[in-house]
Length: 193
Image 1 (cartoon, rainbow, N blue to C red):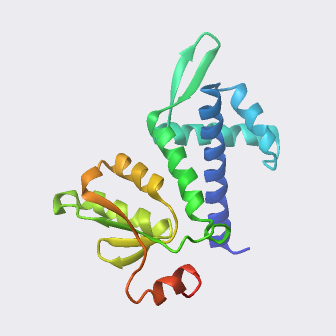
Image 2: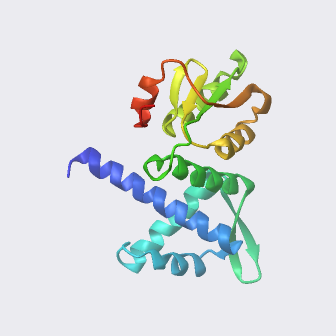
Image 3: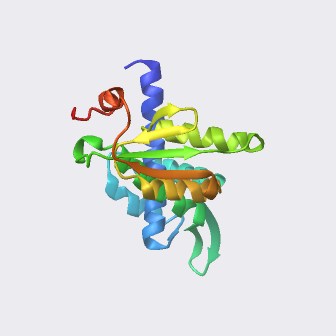
């Protein structure tokens, strides 16, 4: 395996572990840092020896805390971690993103979802973040601020609008047709109609 592939694999594994820790905290409400988290997550298996797994888990918890997705709190039983509102939004985004990545398992209802936005130049960073997110989640850019997706993504867009604080600047449209849509259908591997 090449160096880049190994690096990508390592990054993916870190992401999986962070997601597992965050999900465990969300489900339980809180986790006792040194005792519960590693034992709960040990069920995932395939992480090697216990000492190394504990180190990786604590590292993942540290990354989650530094990103503001969890917080450390003192409790009667010791230190615990709790999920933050930002962490809950992150999990909701991940769930919606996973839904957008499974188009082969979804049936197309012959409607397009179009997302249009008009975000001022002074909020350029937000505009760029929105475009990057749309691209990474598989949307197709029709024009500069117009994106299309063939499946229901209303919940995802609502979460994105809330997270980026861009409610009125983004419009979600459901369209039956797009003129000359052959290239859009080809891009999404949709049947010709």
